[in-house]
Amino acid sequence: METIEKIEQDIIDEFSVYDDWMDKYAYLIEIGTAMPAMEEQYKTEDNLIKGCQSRVWFHAGMQGNLLYFTADSDAIITKGIAGLLVRVFSGQKPEDIAKADLKFIDEIGLTQHLSPTRSNGLLSMVKQIKMYAIAFSAKK
Image (cartoon, rainbow, N blue to C red; front, top):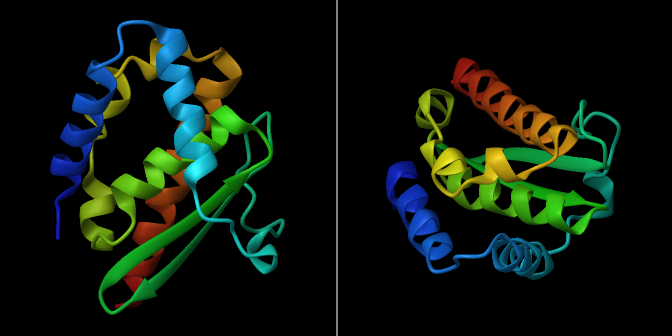
């Protein structure tokens, strides 16, 4: 199993190929488009991320001692951002997720290049993922 830090580094390396932010946005859109569809039963009010301008759903579930996420959004760039977060956190231990520092978000320039509303949405997604992780580690 790859660590959160290793996956973050892979993402930083992938984004470093692009000099232009339009190319990075195009890559985010590709990531969003490639995401598997979320089952409709999980697109509930409970799974909706509060504080996002667009509609974003995150669903979490334990398999063994690892936490897995699915996500979806009605906005394509937001869906790509959600896809990055799913990639980083899915299949990790809840306690590792809860303490992850997510340096990749700043390193790929995401925070500087997102609109304030998208940045708030990103922070809300991260907060929700960490809340899931804390809740699931408490259930052990």
